[in-house]
Image (cartoon, rainbow, N blue to C red; front, top):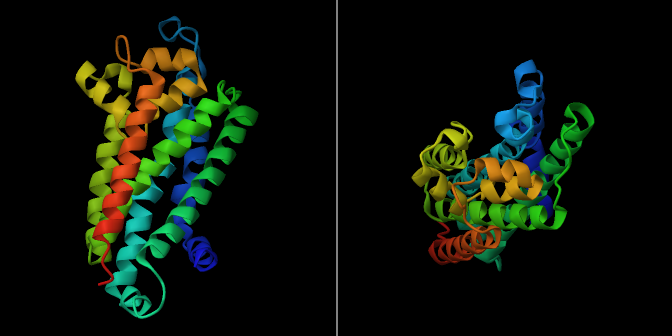
Length: 248
C-alpha cells in the first residue's frame, strides 16, 4: 500500500510542487530581496531571512498534512475505493499509516532540500542543534498529521476536505507566524503559537538560539515543554482519527 501511495503522490504534480518544492523556492524568492539579507541591530545582528527560514519550511509541512492527506483519503471514500477495501483484509489503520509514511517522506525531502539551498545559496547556517531540530521536526509533523487524519477519517467528500484543510492551514500558519511576524504579535497569540503544531517556535530555537530568543515571548515556554505538548497533541489526535475512521 505504501508503494502504491508513493506512486500516486509523485503523479500529483500540484502537491509535489507546492508541498515539496515550494518551501525552498519561497525562501529563495525572499532571499532575492536585498533588505531581507541585511543584518540589523534590532535582530541581534541576524538577517530577517535567517529568522524566517524555519517558517518557509513549515509551509510544506502544513500543506501536505492538513490539505493533501485528508483530500486523498476523502477522494477514496467519495469514489467508493475505501468501501471496496473494507471487503479485504486491509485495516483502516493501514490506509492511514500508508498516507502518513508517504507524507513524512515528502516533507523530509523538502526539508533536506531547503536546508541545503539555504546554506548553499543564501549562506544561512544549518540548524545549530541538529538533534533538537530533528525531534522538533518529527514531533511537530506528527501532530500536524494527527490533526489532518481526524479530517481524513470522517470527511465524506474531497471538496469538504479541501475546505476544512484550507481553514486549518490558515489558522495553523497564522499562529505559527507565517502571515504576521511573531515579533509583531500580541504576547497571548505568541504564547498560543509556541504550544500548537507545527511547533514553529521550537523549530526556530533549534535552528538558531538567537532567532529563537527574538521570536519567543517574554520568558518563553521551555523547549522540551513545547515538544511534550506537541507530542501529546500528536498522540491524542492520531488516536481520535483511528477511532473515528469510516470506510464510507
